[in-house]
Length: 450
Image (cartoon, rainbow, N blue to C red; front, side):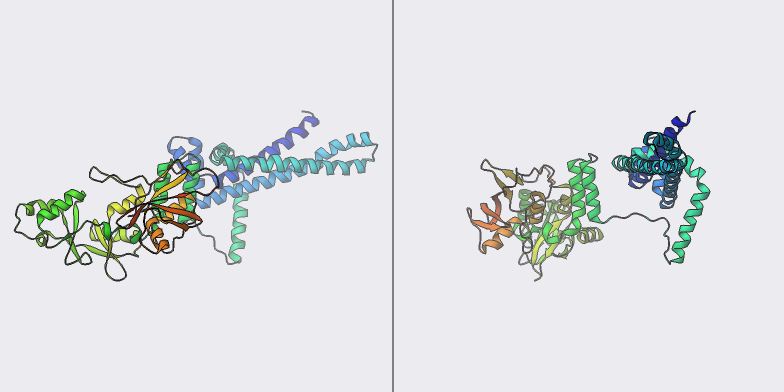
C-alpha cells in the first residue's frame, strides 16, 4: 500500500479510535442503569455485557480508566505519526511549491500537520462523539461495549498499574477510596428526574403527578389535609341509634365521630356496621359500640400521621389545635387522595370542578384548594404564610366574613369572591396576568382541602 494512502488511513483510524474511547467514557457515566438492566432482561446481549460496568462503581472506575488510557495512547500515536511520517511526506511538496529549503519546509510542514490534526482530533475525536454519547447514552454504551471489552483485555496490566498508582497517591494524601458507592438523590433531584422522564415520554401526565404528589407529602401537615370541624359529620353520645344511623345514611360515611357535650370533646367513633344491631334495640346506648379514637396535633407532618394511623391500626384521627380544641379530622382516604387525587365512590357527593375558564377569560377556582398548589400549577405568587386554602386567604385579606362580589388584591391579582356558603368562600375568580395564554394543567390531580 502506498505511503500516500497510509497517511490518510492511519490518522483517520487513530481519530476514530479516539472518538470510540471518548464516546464510551461519556456513555458509561451518562447511561441510565435502569434502562440498561431492562434491555438486558429483554435479552440484549450487549446490554448484558455492559450491565456489570454501570452497576458497580469499581468496575465503572476500571472501565473509565481504560477509556482514558485509550484516548491518551491514540492521541500520542496520532501526534507522533503526524510528526514523523506525515510531516516528512508533506515537506517535499511544500519545498517544491514555495522553493523553500528542506529544514524550513519540514518545520512548516510539522506546524501545518499539528494544526490540522489538532482540529480534526478536537472536532471528530472529541466533540462529535461526546455530543452523540450525551444525547444517546444507552445506544452509545451498547455500540462501544464489544470494542471496549477487547481494549480492557489488552490494556489490563497498564490499567492495573495506573489505577494502583492513583490509589497510592490518594492514600498518601489521606483520601480514602470508598468501595461500592451508591448514588443517592434528594427528593428535589428525584422530582427533576421525574420531570425529565415525563418530557422524554417515559411516563404519562397521570403517573408524573402521582409521583410528584407522593414526594410532596413531606411538605404537608395534618391541618392541610384534614376535614375542618365546620364540615365534620359528628353525633352526640346522647343521640339515639336512629339519629346516628340517619346522619350516616345522609352523609354516606361509615364512621361517625361521637362527642360528649361539644365537638371539642370527641370521645370516640362508631362504625355503621355495629350500629345496625343497636338500631333494633333502641334502649341501648351508643357507649356500647364506641371505639377509641386517636388525637394528633394540627402541625404533625403527614408522613408521621400516616405512620401513626398504621401504628394504632386506625382509619381516622381527630386533629386538635394549639388550644386543645377540635380543629378537624383526617382519614386514610384523605392521605391517599394527596397522592392519587380525589377518590369518589357511589356515596360521595359530586364536587364542583377544581378550575375552569369563563368567556371573559377569568380563571375560576374552588375555595378549598391549597394556595401552594395554585402557586405551583398556575405559576402565581399568592401569599402562603398565614393560611392554607384560597378561601382562608381571602378571609384573612378581607378581615371580615366574605360576601359574594367582594374583591381583594392578592399576589398582584384582583381576586373576586364568586360564591359563599356558611361564611366560607367556595368559589373565586381572577384574571391571569397578561403573560400569554391561560396555562393548561390537564395533569392537575389534587385532593380538595375543605
